[in-house]
Image (cartoon, rainbow, N blue to C red; front, top):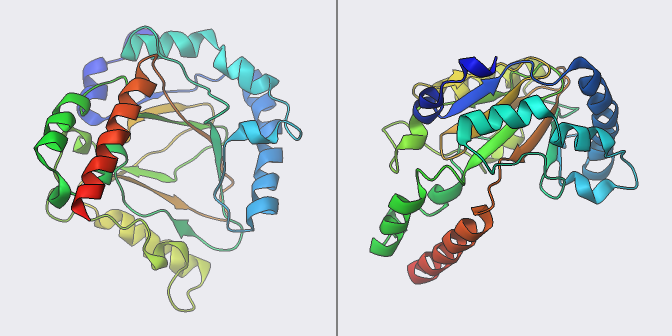
Length: 266
């Protein structure tokens, strides 16, 4: 499997999937804890909860040993190093969450791009544009993870969109729209599923991502992506970042610049 890794495809498409890299024995142990975490998510945040994060907060409820075994998984660490280089880590309990299915009706998080695009184009000054050139293609930041403990087809992605600091026609952010969280009118679950599916398909060049149980997806979260969650499809997907020793310094620098730009735009 590792010899098939193509770094250039990750750089061009913006995502890579290590297929079935989590061994069945570890998958079993992770599922046991994930099922507890899923119940906690709905107990704490209500039946429509779609995540619980960070897992570190629930040390009194969860056995962290399977997650520690996941962090130390040699094949996965080797795969990440083959893709990104040395020094990168995964499985950070202080950040790691679990994405779960809502219980009452379908839910869509809306199309969005994370990270640098949090500052609208109209507010970008010369300092911001210079920083974007510095940070945009820096692989030490903006690598996100979805690791599926059950088969998961929730994520949609626009390959190659992470390469652009601008948006193409038809690329419109929809995160935060009220109809993404609550289906409009009195839609049935089937009607709401179709409504959200049409929304996913409305993004130019969007592709659904299918993860088998035990697949580990790394993606550039600067790309356009969304998630369509269905109550009748069980979901327990580890959501995390790939970190580098320099990540916190780079991120802090970027956040400080964002604050300055936002303040000047008011």
